[in-house]
Image (cartoon, rainbow, N blue to C red; front, side, top):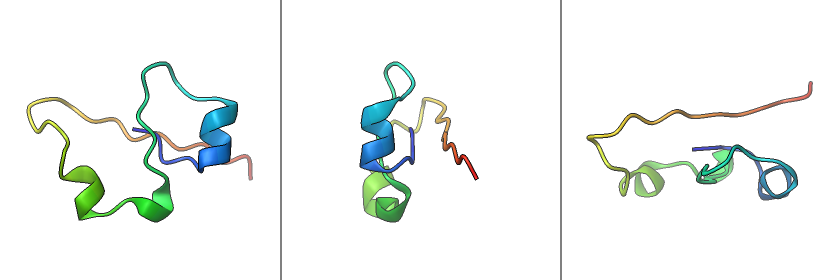
Length: 47
């Protein structure tokens, strides 16, 4: 799961990554995740 903005995700993202922008990350967004599989959350900040 990448929590990049839509523009950053469109520019560059990890293969197979699912984009859930940080501002939209809430219980509803993660409710559909498969609890039997690990989740890696990735965010990049150039600052």
